[in-house]
Image (cartoon, rainbow, N blue to C red; front, top):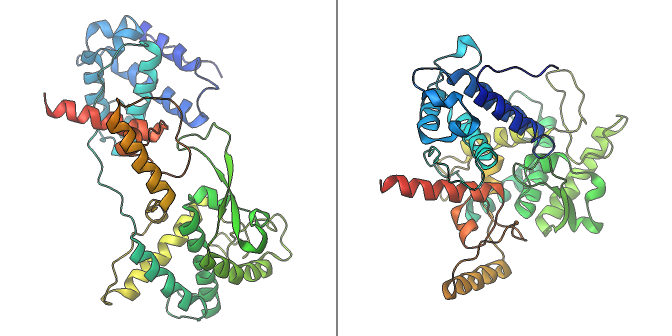
Length: 372
């Protein structure tokens, strides 16, 4: 495909910088970076942008240019399709554009502090408490052995199979805090002897271009019992199906596209199935003493991780060390399971993954903006 020729010198230089990043970032990030180059192409030359923004890529990263570019972008004035122009960018897309600006600034003006826009802090994601998780687990244990009616018009047997699978999946998530993509990648052979453990291919947040790291995580008694119920069901579902013998999580009913039961579940449908069951569970349990509605998302369950005793001891030790000396800023992620995407994890646990670095940067910028 012939590279697009941009009129402004600054945009051509910026496009060359992006081309030089091929192989160092994921394909998805490359598409996002090229999207931002296109947005700059549509911004340069407008009356809102300073005239010198067309001279060089460095001029695109002055605050006069960045501020004007950001206002135009957020208001939807730089969209590629004419019919979408004027439609405000959603917050998720704003975050993508801001992340691309940060990457580009590091390469176009390395070593120079570039003022970038500050996004509003999102509301914290709903997570489950240990009490909620225990109540959910007990209730689903009861349901897994029953044949409830009145749910989505499915047969009693299909309803039972849904809940046998959900019980096993939820128990595994509670023990491993795996993402939907990690669950979709699990195979039967990843389970340890006696269902005492499971091997998980962990991938760093925003690290689709990086090789996953395999870790073996222990499973508790509840997960072993739940998997013991699910595996015989799963074996019957996949019998006679090609390409599904190894997948740990498979469908239990014919899909809307006509796929038979036993087809491996994709990450998207693992999340959809969980959300559907939790909404039903909240409706059934509404009004019962001690019940709090659960967040209808697998991510809320995954992020509600409570550190084990040894992790709490390690955190206390790190905090004591930081109190006694200036904080270090080493590079590289912290070993061990931590809650990412928080300024605390960046400052105290010294995690330098992309998610924690971005959270800490946004927090610092927000504080500086508040004092201006």
